[in-house]
Length: 335
Ligand code: PBG
Image (tube, rainbow, N blue to C red; front, side, top):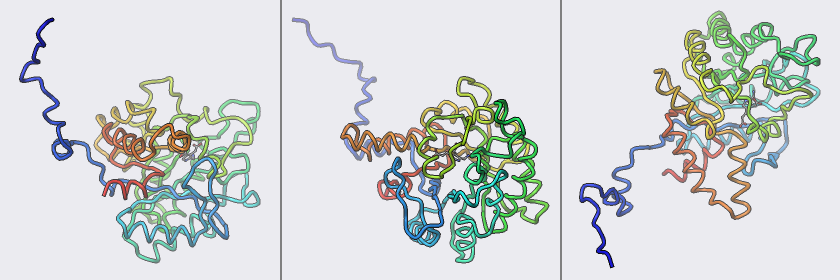
């Protein structure tokens, strides 16, 4: 029998894991509730309509969305990002309904502004939920033959107009998510020209063409009639391109930048955090939410523990703002 060898007395990390109190004492990653952003899908509906692939998420009628914002903001959740669900009859080739004061998301913006709530309202700015073809902008004439699909510069004009409309309805932050080159500069110019210098821009600067958006396309009814988004969203096989996107958006005046999705891109979040001074957001997307729910429903994972672990990982990677469908639950779990 060999004698057990004692580890060196200076290498005993377990000293600081001995009790809940000591573990909490040395915790260095905290999730500020003020940094959570809750996505809401707003539709012209009589009552909430659950999204099958996103348990706990529903398309909300305008009144319910307003009430949800009032209730949650009282409990400390202060940031919301709105997505509008558009009936087929209102969709067209340009997505013009996005700027319509009667569109559900825009009605919510106006109501929240009129109620004077102390919240931050982000308006997602993209056309995929508003176009009849489901792409994020105006199409090239030869789009169906493949290629780049979305006409970049024609879309910039529409982005500027729509951003100005959203700001006029009361959006505090315009969040363009279409990955159109030059979008931040075009939007900044349009906002300033229209008299909205105070509206901030949170650019979805670094957004990958991801299959993790699948459930969102059910929720927002923004699937594509043909093709995919690889002609404008980023290719996840390129590891350095985020630097180009980040630099471009900062030069054009982005107030904050987003990385999306989150869990499969923690390295990118860390890179962005270390290479800029503006607040960095990360979007824990629909598919990342759905997979935890699906496994939890089967009894394979614990929903609360895995959702918390995921959110801490995103925070630890460097995200200041976290866009997450778990926001209302996190509010309870973190208090
Ligand atoms: C619209 C948009 C998408 C998401 C946010 N804004 C979908 C897409 O780009 O296809 C995805 C969000 C999620 O999956 O939770 N451009």
